[in-house]
Length: 98
Image 1 (cartoon, rainbow, N blue to C red):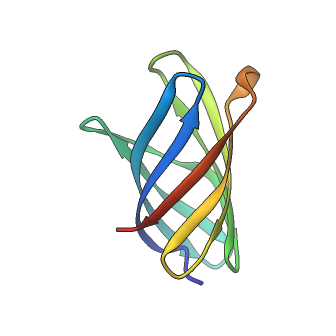
Image 2: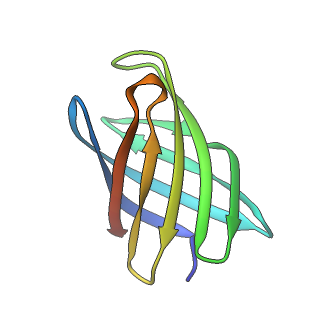
């Protein structure tokens, strides 16, 4: 399945559900894109894609500075996976194609 496109996603964090839009593009095994929420967008980095699997990182500043590490599997219309929340453990990731 193609990772490329826009995805309405959410992660279940210790501070509650966080919804965001992922916009992803692959170029060979490289993955680039943005995460958008609350009127702002941040770039992803260290992105890699292999078939229906993808990994990437992003840095957030609110509610605190933290690096999020994503590990996801993409289907035709759905995404599932986990997000490493630094010292706060892992959070489930889910979403649908926008």
